[in-house]
Structures are given as C-alpha cells and as structure tokens.
Image 1 (cartoon, rainbow, N blue to C red):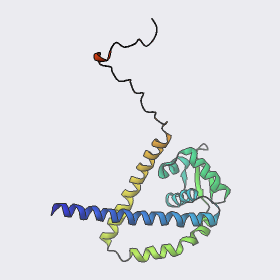
Image 2: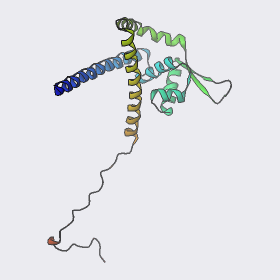
Image 3: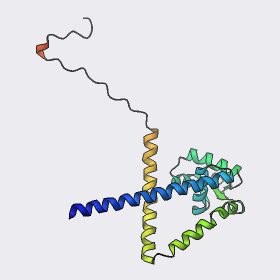
Image 4: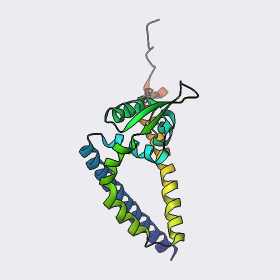
Length: 186
C-alpha cells in the first residue's frame, strides 16, 4: 500500500512539474513575442517587469531581485533607457546614488499586450477559495526564492573554470613484475 502511495505521489509531482514547465515555457514565448514587438530582448522585458513590481530602485537592487550581475544590469538599463522605457534619476540627497525608474507612459504601451492575459488569470483566480489563493501565493513566492537560488548555482557553475580531471598516477607495479626503472637519470 505504501509503495502505491509513493508511486501515486511521484506521478502527481511529475504531472505538476510538467504543467509548470509548460506554463513557464509558454510564458517565455509570450514574453518573447511582446519583446520582439516592442524591439527589446526577452530578458530586458523581464527586468522591466521587475522594475514595475519593485518601483524605483538602484541597479544593485535590480541585480538582487533578478539574480543578474550589476554589470549585466548596467547593460539592461542602458538598453531600456535607449528604448525610452526607463530613466536614471540621481538621488537629491546623495548625488552618487542613481535610481532606475520606469517611464510610465511608455511602459503603459507595453501593458496593453498583457490585458487579455491578465483578465484570463483574474477569472481563473476567482475560481479558487481564499485558502487556495493563499496556498498558490505561498507556492509562487517560495518558487521565486528557489529559482533565485538555482540562478545563483547556475552562475557559479558557468563562471567556474572548467575543472580538468586529476592526473592519474601510473599503476603501482608489483614486486613480481621486476625492478622499476628510475624516472630520470642519476
């Protein structure tokens, strides 16, 4: 009985993984279609979405929430600024500090591509109870944290120099096989 429960749970978890992968892949395709339409990259569009969620932030904060390096974020901000979607704003209290802020009127033009999807999602969410919505919220929030950690692991793996396999020592010779030759002349 326990084995069949374990198999049923494993099958359910596999179904969940497959459903999430499909949803994630479709989300990437949807986002890339929007990005292509707007004339920016998919990853730049995702960073713009983080800016929409976070509000006016520093490049460091944007790097933190995306898992990208500050160097990568500089390139993202440069491209988004060139596209007229964000602007850099100096902190009046500390001129060394720079915030990245969206340009609302230009970002709103992109938002229209998401309206029908948003309506569909709201309709779906309305079919869940408050308790189910809290569970989904917890799942999504914890999933984001897990993905951030996976991104950090991936960066470490990609940035690490390729490790060469250790040199193999020649096999030890048994005494029965005769005397060993010296490795160099005396």
